[in-house]
Length: 259
Ligand code: PGA
Image (cartoon, rainbow, N blue to C red; front, side):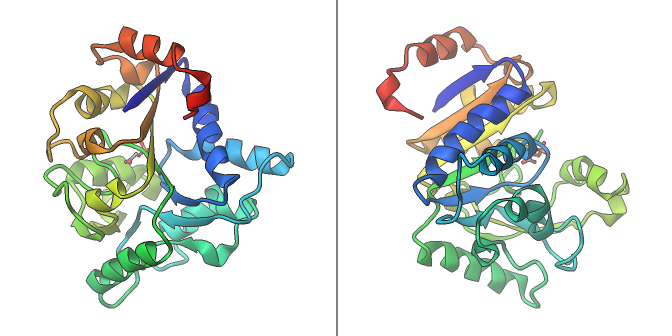
């Protein structure tokens, strides 16, 4: 796990955009996350596309997760959110932007079909991830199996509370079920890019980086992956013990190694 510590959330966004841009230039399959944290990265990628520095026209994209039961055109579906935040502003073909079908009559079958679709397309080259305050990745809440595949999950009440801000603060409007890539699915991506900002994430970041691998912190499963880039701002590293070492290691990284 490579830990990159930068001064602020803007630098997190530009650093994450550097990593994603390198994959996009190769026409790679991108795993996209929704939520507040990646928004700055997406703005930066759009900026680079508009200035002619970057194209996504050979890319395919897969979302991590989707609410169950919201109509597809509801502004808070992740289908709509990712189009609003990124994909409708860049040159990726809309039909190549995939997400789990939260409107399916049989969401369990839709989850399995999504898993097959990812496999048929050759897997995900780079997966962007945020972390929940409880350590979740995707919507894999604490105690999710570290071997889990795409499936239906019930949201933890803390996550419902966290996400109520997208539903005018009304928890009763937040769907309680989601389809999410499993932790095993996420670990199959060839490169994981985790971004976290702000002191509200500091506790979860510590459990992810320095805690034991445990289903109580789903993000700690990243310790099992051979290619993880973690990009953090100063506030998010407040509880880490080995900041000096991570900073030293990154500043001595050979240039040829890339991300
Ligand atoms: P956030 O969510 O980026 O909105 O903080 C992260 C997550 O829950 O994965």
